[in-house]
Length: 216
Image (cartoon, rainbow, N blue to C red; front, side):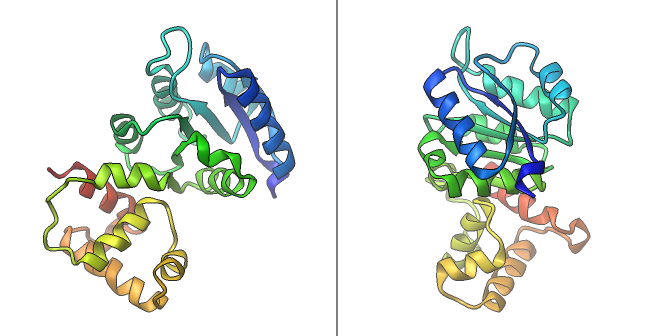
């Protein structure tokens, strides 16, 4: 249930922080801590017994990458905690860093996306359950200009881009207006062309995205 989810929020803007707390409350989540900086973030998250951390990318004191560094620290120290990073901009390097270990339970959304209760609820739910959530604009920037994977058909590229957004086969089918069986065939073809063995199980979806983004 939503009210079982405990969230720690790290956002330096007081107005946005208060707005997010209200959104979380409306969604039935418990905000176990709300901070304006990432100081002692691991200790704060551990003490709050948080399920998910929602964190800005740029935080005091330098407003550069404090949020990303803190997110990576949380993933190393508390791998069971989901991390949802928010940014005002598309910062592809940071998205790569977050996705690098292919463990899931991580998300990268633009702040405009969190104005919607539905978007926030869905993102927190998926990150908490070990899924990967990427803002569609981030995905487009990550894949733009890459000429690798020429062996993928246009439809397979569409499917892979939607996988990168964290969508299920059913959701992809609805978006592309095709059957779930057709999506499954495209996903199988993508895995085969990328050399991802069946033994890798569900992690193949994340690995497929990583392979696509990391190829030049």
